[in-house]
Image 1 (spheres, helix red, strand yellow):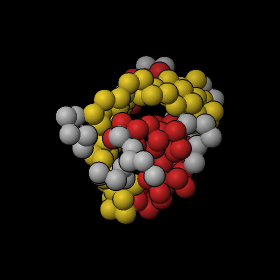
Image 2 (cartoon, rainbow, N blue to C red):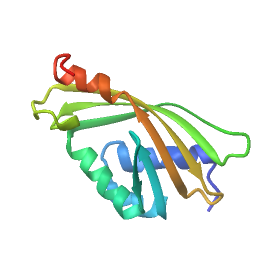
Image 3 (cartoon, rainbow, N blue to C red):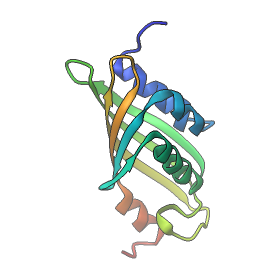
Image 4 (cartoon, rainbow, N blue to C red):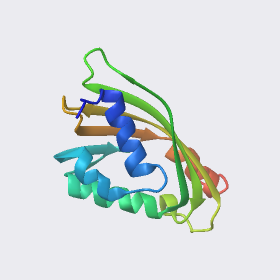
Length: 140
């Protein structure tokens, strides 16, 4: 098998886990056992916990569509920054009432990628506050 570039490894993750159809079981093959996700200031530690988190996130957005906007690697390929956009319908996102309202969310993910293409950790920032305001008609 040909070694994936770091960007290809991240795009492979996006394609298999988040792009239609979502396949959270692919996480088992794409990230290390002690994977760490940092999202919104919270840490999700271990592949199993990350997989559970991903399933939970996926259940609160119906008709989830995920688009990679842009990705690029650092000079040695150990880190990848990726900007993304997702759309779908509200099924309780951000602890709001599941009303089917349209959702559009953007974010940035920074990944650490092992030489063999396995993902080591991910730090994600997303426009959750703006999405919350959209879903609650500006109430904060």
